[in-house]
Length: 365
Image (cartoon, rainbow, N blue to C red; front, side, top):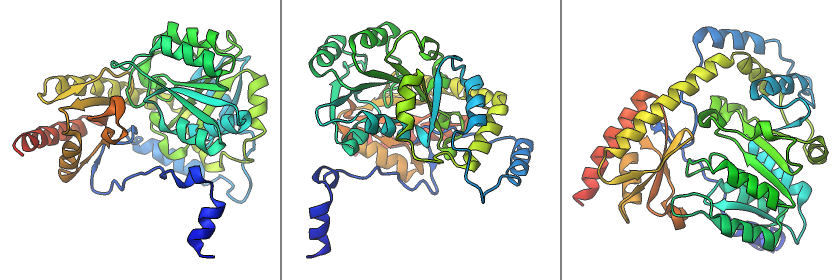
């Protein structure tokens, strides 16, 4: 039997039909494609951090419960005292824990569409159905459709990115509450971009038995640490903790995240600068003929191009050494759309210069 035949025989057909999550090589580009914080730490903070890491015991397993880091996160994220917390190697792992603990051949995961691609991918990994409910043209929730599908499928879990990725908008708080009241299963409010939004459901934990809040430190300038948290009632989180792999948060992540959150004022200042930069970039895009930016409460801006021009503009920007995200191939509401991460002021200016040049080049093709 050939290796191709063995793979076909043993690997699930739905996995074989998928594509691995693709991350382009950013070498040599102005990198505005992955919603990262572009700022580094002050030199004295880096020195203090590296000194701390010298005393980290790499020969020992990490604290399996990451108790000190959890305590720091509780304070930094204002998690209610009566609510539990578990940590994941990024929010992706937390989504996977939830899916693995709740999976059943007859159960579904639901989310609006478009939204974070990992909800769909992890549903497939777990062998669960995935029910995507299309957003309206302005990317707001289609509440009649959401409520109808909840009634029809009673999904095990509904994920609501708040703000939504890749559209950048916040759903109405009253509509999220309506979904919480309609759902028999879990509702996970994914607040990955909370730092830029100024709105949260964290304070509502405990008011609804089926509400969990998920966050990450990635957008706060700590993407390289891969750390996410899930907060909510102990009864839920104790079950998800059973499928968490032991020692999933390594010693360097625990020490580094605890240190960074101790210097929260530096991270907050960087966030404030990015919010200011977002406003400037939004205005620049609004003033540019040939693109239509959508409102954003995150650290990125989705914008629509003229029909059939998105791929050309994306490639034109790459030729000018600027890397953003091409969402055109996703189709549907994202057809003709591109997404740019908000960077430092000089990066945003370079992006706008490259975009103006590219639009002029595309127009004369």
